[in-house]
Image (cartoon, rainbow, N blue to C red; front, top):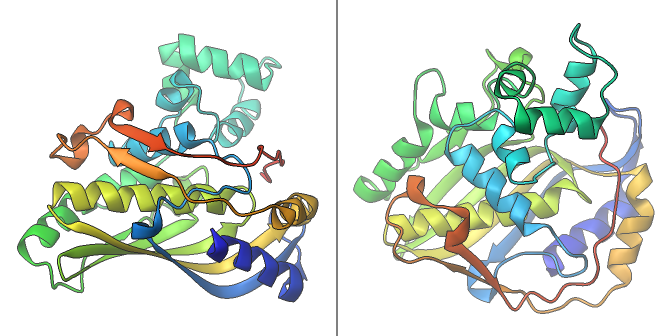
Length: 288
């Protein structure tokens, strides 16, 4: 994962200090690109252990068009909990519940989950119903029927609905590209939390690329990751330096059930990560 570590070094050395929406403060650069050839292995960080279960379930949640955290918390995935919990604490229903108590209510009380677990029209809604358009289905159809198209684009950035989202999309636009029977994907990410978010984003979109390639009978090419505001939060500097001090290990291999023929039929059990040998995980607080 040299491209990721090069990004970390670049931002630590050349980043400018900027304040941000959360009040934490960051080192930031604008405009940076990484490339990952998936023939070299699955791009999951080895300088710290990354929680792949969360990545897979979140991606399946996006693909399904879901926007309620109930599916995620039912599978013990907590990466989206902070935002709806904060909204809940500002509601008249809030009785001083802790985060853990809130999550338990989401799991056990369907009416509560429907009222206090929805994030608004975030990624899943935009992917599957952007002003009535199923963008994922459109891309699948284009890849199969018009693979030279330069319009195989999916956008999560819907200005008309930003105000209704718990968090405006950070990974905003993807484009697919076919050449020599290989499928590649480029992601444009407007805001990139390098320590916590970017490792997830790399793995998530690389996996999406593999899934789409399989169901369209193409080989896998490159994942290209283009960042807008690429930043390291000030409370993550030590964690980044620790990663930079660690030896890079060989990338693992992602095995996908070859019997799945539709993008919408994938289940968590269809994925198997082989030969993943990371350094221990490193904790860091999410900036909300």
